[in-house]
Length: 477
Image 1 (cartoon, rainbow, N blue to C red):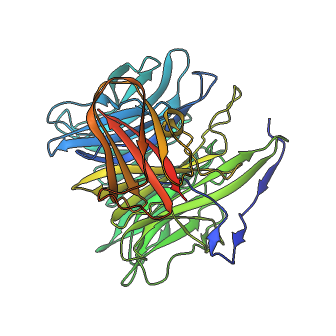
Image 2 (cartoon, rainbow, N blue to C red; image 1 turned 60 degrees about the vertical axis):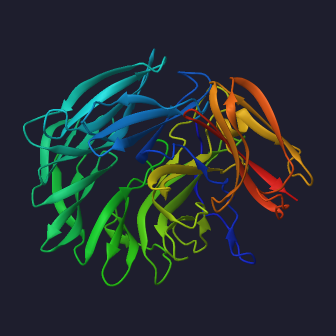
C-alpha cells in the first residue's frame, strides 16, 4: 500500500533551456503502407500474465471502405493481429474498459457501422490472443458514437447530437441535447462535451452527485470562439486529478490549449507557444513508486505545435513549466499525441511502474503511422522499455569505427535493415534480403549510402520483417 502522496513539479535546467526529463528516441509502431490512427494502450499486470505486458489497440485502414481494429503486443513486438474487421465495414474508436481475469486479458469497445448505422460493440481478448465477439454494447436504429469510460462502471456516449451517461447506480440519463458531440468521461462524476453555440462550438460539462445519484448541468466552460478536442486528465487509478479538462480553443488567428478545473470551477493556467498553433492536448498523471514505498505524483501534458513551421509533438510538466521537449523530432506533420501511464502498480516482479508513454500520428510517405516514445520517471533513462531493446542491440555503442548490430526475429521473410537520423532521413540500407527466424547480426562501418563517414550523433537502426519492426538507438562518437 502506498503511504504518502506528494504533488511535485520537475525542476528545470535553466542554463540549457531543457527539462530534466529525458525521453527516448521516437520509434514506429505501425507499417508505412496503411493508415493508422487513434491508438490506446492496455497494460496487463504480472498478476494475470507474466511479465507485465503492454498491448496497443488502434484503427488501421488500407482502403476507404474498410477500417479495422488491430492489436499488438508491444512487450514482444510480435506482429499486429486483427481483433475486429469486416470487408466494407468500419470499426473505430477502440477503448479498453475492463481488465480481465483467468484466461481473459481485457475487454475493449469500439463503434461500427456493420448494421447500416453506427452502433457500439465490444470484444474480449484472451491470453492466447484469440478474440471473442463482437457483442452489442449500445445498439439502436440511430447512430451511437464516441463511447468513453471513467471506469468500467461509468461511461458516456453520443446519440444523434445528444449526450447520454450511465453508471452502476443509474439507468441511462440524457445529459445534453443541443447539437452536442465528442463526450469525454472524467472519473465517475464528470462528462465534458462540445455544444453548438450558434455558428461556433462551446465546451460544457455535466456533474454527477455521488450522494443523491443525480446529474446536473450542462455548465459552460468556454462559449467564446471555437472549442474542440476535449480530454480529461487521468492517472493509474483514474481517481487522482480527474477534474482537469483540456481542449483546443481558437478565438483569433491561432489555436491555443486551455484548461478548466471542473471541481473548483476555475480556469487552469496552461502554457503555450505564443503566436503558434497549439492543438490536440493530452494530459495525465503518473505515480513514481520508490524503494521507500512513496508515491510521488507528476502531471504531464502533451500537444502538437507548429512553432518550428512543422507540426511536431511537445511535452512539458504542468502547470508552471514553460520548458518543452520536442519528442517527435520530425520535420513533417505530427499530430494527436496521447499520453498514457502505467495504469497500475504490479505486485509481481518488475513492470511498467513509473513509465510514461506518448503515442502520436505521423504523416509519412502518404500514410498515417503511429510513432511513440517513453520516459522512465524513476531512472530518467531514455532507453526503450519494450521489444527494441530486448530483441535488438548494437555493440560497441557508442562506437567510433564500426558497430555490430544483433537482432532476433520471430518470423522468416524479406528483411530490411536501415539507418535513420533523428529527422527520419534514411542514411543507409544495410541489408534487404530474405532471412530466417532466429538470431542474426550485421556490421555497420558508420558510413552513409555514398561511403562518406557520418557525423557524430544519435541514429536509429530499424529492422523490419513482415509486420515486425525492431529499433535501437546507436550513438556515433
